[in-house]
Image 1 (cartoon, rainbow, N blue to C red):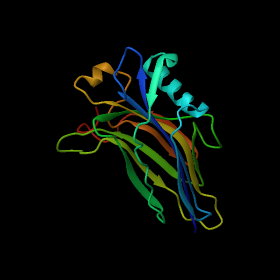
Image 2 (cartoon, rainbow, N blue to C red):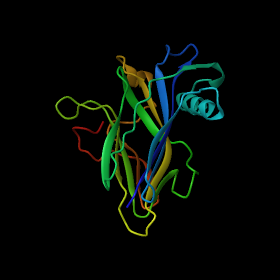
Image 3 (cartoon, rainbow, N blue to C red):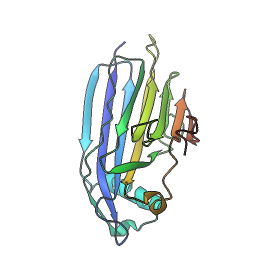
Image 4 (cartoon, one colour):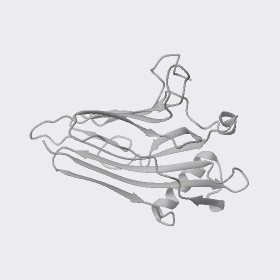
Length: 212
């Protein structure tokens, strides 16, 4: 069975006036489509902030952190990559946090998008799960959004994962937890989705060594 892998992305840093220094909050948007009926592999990167989509990302981030979107300055952040291996049914990976930051949260960009549930489409008995990972000495050395997908090779069946979501990081300076209490807990699953049923912000299931 053939595959299509499509990724669109917008990346930026966000500066609430009078609240944080330049690029203390970073937001990237990912547009993911994995479908088993065509053979096309491409990545599309959008870097223009002054677009309706770019402004929407800033507005959403400011609403989350309680800053005024009209006073936001923004610059382009280096995009953390989502890399999906081709030709596999079971896939996993990590959207790596930029150096000097830590992951804060991830969320579907439009909960009402598409034919899925809560903005995550897992059609044809597919799976798309995510986990917030932060460094735990001796247990975990990664920081970022861990993800796991299963897109079965089924003849004559439309199996696909389709989602648009935002990942937000904050500067990992001492005391960042107190400065950004809105950040979700380590080990939490921003979403667990299978067969077009999605559960958001699922508590950590990885044991006390990882859960925070």
